[in-house]
Amino acid sequence: LPRHACVPYSFSTEFEEASNLLAETPDAATTSGSNQLTPQGHVAVAVDSGGSYGAEEEAEESDRTALLQEEKQQPGFWTFGYYQSFFDVDTSQVLDRIRGSLLPRPGHNFVRHHLRNRPDLYGPFWICATLAFVLAVTGNLTLVLAQRRDPSIHYSPQFHKVTVAGITIYCYVWLVPLALWGFLRWRKGVRERVGPYTFLETVCVYGYSLFVFIPTVVLWLIPVPWLQWLLGVLALSLSAASLVFTLWPVVREDTSLVAAVLLLTVVLLHALLAVGCKFYFFQPLPLEHLAPPLQATSLPQDVLLPLTPGAKTT
Image (tube, rainbow, N blue to C red; front, side, top):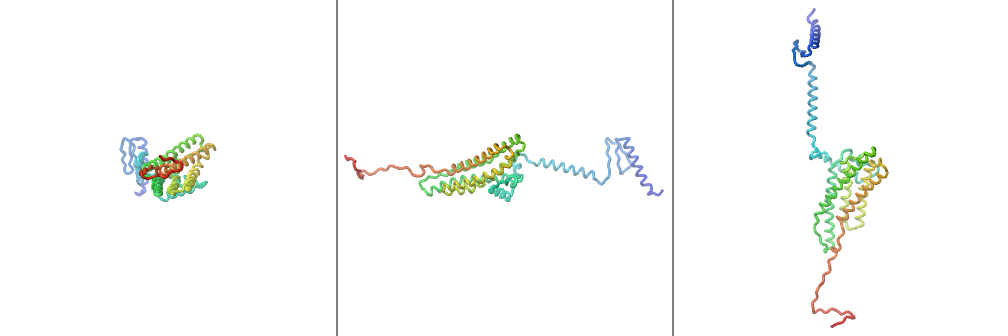
């Protein structure tokens, strides 16, 4: 036979012999590039298929390494890096959420249309800080303007109002949403169709709802009582409406009594915050500051006072 005709026979014979020997002696290792069978402590079959097996193993190893690195890089909730993602928001998103809180309307859910499963703490944090600062400053400016109108009024800077305003606003924005979120979680266990928002979404809704009070507090510098109350009622209506329209899709699945009581409580707490800030930071001046007390004056002895009719002289 020609030389090239024996090549297929030699390959097939070699493969059959290697297969039979491997079946009889499982502790053998075959190598396709040679005719040697070497006993080993394990079976190692090396097949030259373009390095596909090695490439797959390297890819799996690289994926495993990437996952381990991601797990190592994910910070814990007690670190600042964990909360950094909640401040990752641009200016356009913050402005859009502010507009949504200023223009509430029925059927427009603030969480679904503006947050979109991405609540942030940047907007609520700076809205609360700005509101606390404006409250303290305008409360002091009210006394300054009153002193300019009436020099008899004594004014001293009240720096403690900054602390009071900050504690009041931040406690309200964190504690009230926490209680609301806990109550809705409890109602979810009672009625399965009640699905509450997350805690951060609730905080975000309350934080943005307070933005309308910032320009209102500035306008409270106008010394017209009826105008101050009118602006306060308007701001309270817009802010409370934003909360009610956002919470209604969640509480409407509950009983009518629970939904009504919950929404009424939300509105009353909001009104209590607004009225409390109005009376504390823009309190009316005490009566003793409106006019100086009368002081007795002594007259010289040689000054004669006019006698009234019926008075007796000695």
